[in-house]
Length: 149
Image: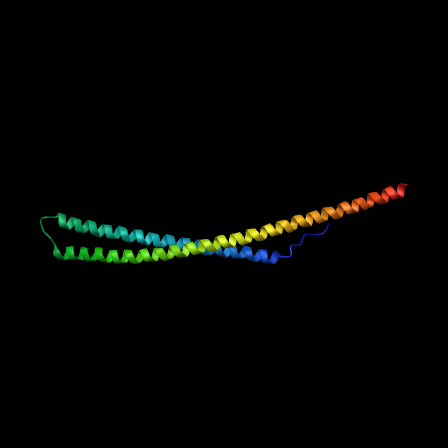
């Protein structure tokens, strides 16, 4: 029985490797996005802590500490700036993540297409093999029938 040899197996192997690479890139992009999101959440919590401390200082009616109040105001303002910058960084990470997702989807579609082509070629090979076998059997039957007469 002849062995099935897919002539575009090399291309299929390359497509599988490209898909694996795209999966790796996607996972790195997802990790970066998650890290940037965590940084943003940490900054938001830090700002909330500064705002809470500022409210406490204002609520303490006994003695206002102007230096500390000014320090908290500056800290809150600097946190706002850092949060805006982090939001921009998060948007960049999200854009990279979407690009990696698109690239992964494209690589998966190409691999699936080549796998379908391989399956069709295998089916055609099996049909051809079955046809050849039936031809041989018909030849043997004809020979046997002709020799028996």
